[in-house]
Length: 153
Image (cartoon, rainbow, N blue to C red; front, side, top):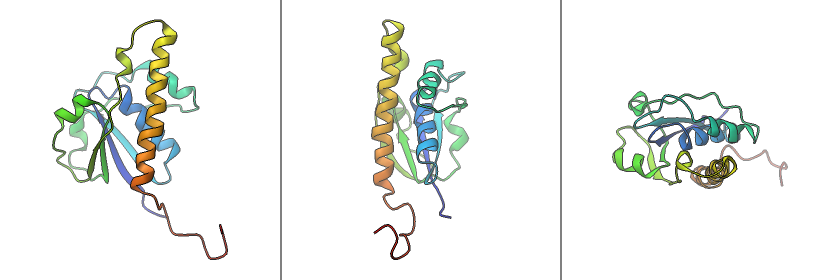
């Protein structure tokens, strides 16, 4: 068994974008990546609409907001900031790992009808699935040893 790479997803409140990214990575790429998330100013709870739009695609997320200090002494292969505020407030990650910024708008600031607000959360969820998971695939394009000769050809 190969060792999974570790990724830390940083955001301000750790209630929407970073939580969705953590859940998506652990469910869809969990054989290769172990994701954690944290906030520079963690909220009290994960946003209910973030949990709702994850459940729409079959992910039952049970995460809780955590502060970045919980992870300062831990080693990560990659640290991804998903909001501009976190990128500015964590300009130097004191731990190990490559740092990458992939920005998404804050869906918690969306306004309008219930359906318009949910659409904003879905758009961010889908953007994370495409851009962050795509980046992880590029970062680690060879997840394990090649198949034995004669297989997969």
